[in-house]
Image (cartoon, rainbow, N blue to C red; front, side):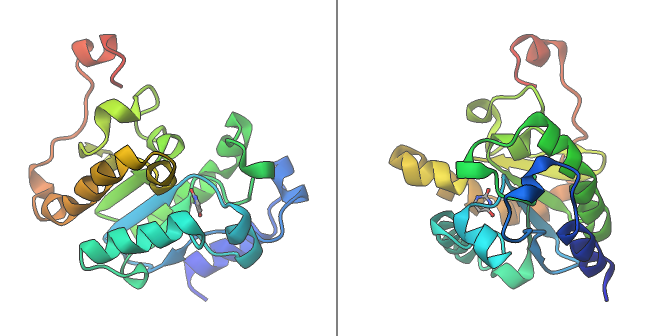
Length: 200
Ligand code: URA
């Protein structure tokens, strides 16, 4: 059993927050264990909870199209979420749920060692850029602890707000170029101006 599989087994037994009480299945994530590109969404929804797999609903269909637009398939990348159990009624994850689940995502990232982490939505973005606004930093790669973080809007946001769709498509299309130029991306340090503007 791979270390990622062993971690998924550990997640399946997790009772560190109350979400375990309402889950059908845990959704640890799936994909290549040595993927260059890792996508991190928010939380499982209804279908993900039923199937134990990430992004299998409408947002997942759009994510598949986005992957296809840059010549990738699910099996080429790793797809995970900030939290591994479905919040009731798909509400936003609570800070204590995110904190309880953080060690699992940390360990997944440490095992996979991706070149780029594409954060989907604000909860995922907040891991690297806690004060940022997604409208201000989406589509801008920055290195944090040697890994490129690339914030994107959540695919579901584009489904609810059609005006965002082209932005999501355009941000996705830049990923191959960002990977090719990875060594030129500077380590992130917020400037005082950016801090003041609450960009980060
Ligand atoms: N939305 C997410 O953020 N993650 C999923 O797995 C499905 C929908």
